[in-house]
Amino acid sequence: MYNLPTFAEQYKIDMSVKTIWFIVNPISGTQQKKKVVAKIPEYFPEDRFAVEIKYTEYAGHAAEIAREAVEKKVDIVVAVGGDGTVNESARALIHSDVALGIVPCGSGNGLARHLDLPMNADGALQIISECNIHTLDYGLINGKPFFCTAGVGFDAFLSDKFNKSGKRGLLSYIENALREGSKYEPETYELEIHEPESEVRTYRAFLITCANASQYGNDFYIAPHASMSDGLLDVTIMEPFSVIESAQIAYQLVNKTITQNSKIKTIKCKELTIHRKTPGVIHVDGDPLDDVEDLHVSLIAKDIKMVVNLNKQSWQHPLLKIFTDLYNEVSQPLIETPKKISRINGEILNKLRNKN
Image 1 (cartoon, rainbow, N blue to C red):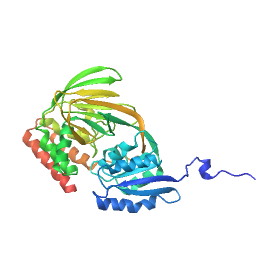
Image 2: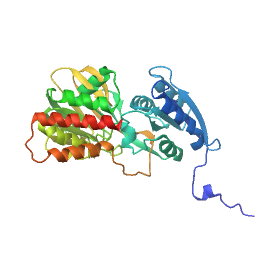
Image 3: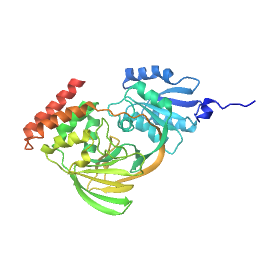
Image 4: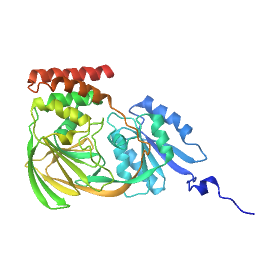
């Protein structure tokens, strides 16, 4: 008598029980995370998954839990939280066979958005339950891992201001950007490119961003062509621009066309060093680090496993419509005044407030 193959054997479906740890920060976004935890049994039945919920109790605890998961050979660690929880967990999982899953509960959600993960709990949990895992790249800046972006200039300056303000959310970030942008003084940087070819370039720049992923978060695409699987950094140099040009730049950041702007220069490389004359703030995935002079940045290829979404769907951020409407209003005629730009900034903030 023949033993016929099971459906799983015939189609090579992995039916082994997966061990999954959910890391939850209970302090911020309490109600949202309670809903996520309540939905877990719906997507992770006991016959297929061995699930544990791990609550963080202090700063750095998420990294400790993730390192323990590596030691115990857990299959997937899921960060339930914002960029801080996600990045802290991810840094502990590099060089390992444990995959990172994400249930985005923050304001920026840069890595989750780049991976086209759903922004709602049901969608994110469904993707994690499908267990589609890819091995992806990450970056190092002065030895510190980053997954989306790191750099110097206005974005680092803004990250520092945002961090010190104590306020969170997109509206607060945009308020800081509109208030500080016209006052920020660009600097001169020397870029020493090591790979793939050695060369030195000098730029006077508003900002320099080294991108492993396409965006900062909130669908602001500073490097729209960046890939986490090409083995290269996308370096975006934004040269100084006028107040009049700021509306176009904001619009292009949201609609993924910033590289078409004449003030943007781009470089693809594996490794570079950024020199500047005096120490100052840099940012690593949006977290500011002060008193840094030289930045050594490199790309580590295919060294972190992540749960990915194979069923990507196009989605338009509400910001795109806001910036499109306002940009279309002011782009003709091209001669604008600072007073009108100030009015536009006010309209952007009012429309964002009305959406909250």
